[in-house]
Image: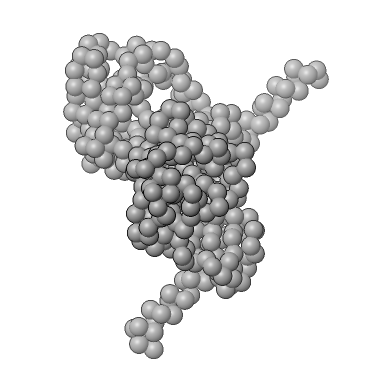
Amino acid sequence: MNNADFEALARVLMGRIFIELEASGRHVHVTEEQARALFGHGLTPDRPLSQPGQFVAKERVTVIGPKGRFDNVAVLGPERREAQVELSLTDGRTLGITPPVRSSGDVTGSPGCTLSGPRGQVDIRQGVIAARRHVHMTPEDAKTMGVRDKQVVKMQVYTARPLVFEDVLVRVSPDYATFAHLDYDEANACGFRKGDLGRILS
Amino acid sequence: MNNADFEALARVLMGRIFIELEASGRHVHVTEEQARALFGHGLTPDRPLSQPGQFVAKERVTVIGPKGRFDNVAVLGPERREAQVELSLTDGRTLGITPPVRSSGDVTGSPGCTLSGPRGQVDIRQGVIAARRHVHMTPEDAKTMGVRDKQVVKMQVYTARPLVFEDVLVRVSPDYATFAHLDYDEANACGFRKGDLGRILS
């Protein structure tokens, strides 16, 4: 084998053992109707995210709570059927909102907030959550790593402040790319830097 | 045994297995000279901390970095031989300072910042750190839990978002009370609430 072959082999082997970590900053998902109310039109893709088809929009919003606000917050597309505002617990303290720790899409009974864009303002009745830590995984990787969709696992992270995250939700779909997602409290608690890896323990 | 006896016994047994967690918010330690420059006098105790002899002072300071500032930051006493500013990595991002993760007192080569009080301003040349997670322990508890001063252990935390912190420094002294100290990134990453417990795994 030549050097390129060795590197390709190493990449495949690494991918069977390790999962790349990503830190998700605060961000907002909106419906088509809300996008029109906030921006006057639908979302415009700016750059792609690691998950196929998902993107960071050119549009930005202000998120307003009873005690504070964040300007210039990322909006992720495509539009969804219900609004969702993903914050860290630290962010929640700044806004004066206590987001429950929930899986994406599970927003029933969560607090609301106000979103403000260049064309208007939208009050959302619910949808402010702290995302439960999770791993997106292809069916192939799930098979190799011996885990199923919706399984809850422990994940060792190989970071500057190493730790083992428990209660990590595995989500398997052919529409996913394999990445573990942390929020910024978790990323800072483990000293995450781009490119850091994790490994499922059980 | 009566109820009071049972409760006392339960407390002793719990104390041999579990360690109470505490979250340390951002705070500042100053020298006597710096206290006089900032406040016109030495520190005035407001309320005691869990560690014997340590206190939150009535005095508060503003911590200023190149990109931001925090007003009304707690000052802990008594005064020390060298200034130390303990921030989370999230706080560091707000100030535009990257604090290294260090044990308390280990400030050589760390970044500086500006402190501002009602009487004046002090530039500290170094001392801005993110506190390495650690457990303060009495010699009795260290013996019971089978650990030594300066040992590095793993600690399971029984919190809303459970995890196992690795790289936890044990510090043993007859001057300590037994408590595990996390910063707010770590506290939020594990969903800490007052009264939550941890346990040393190794």
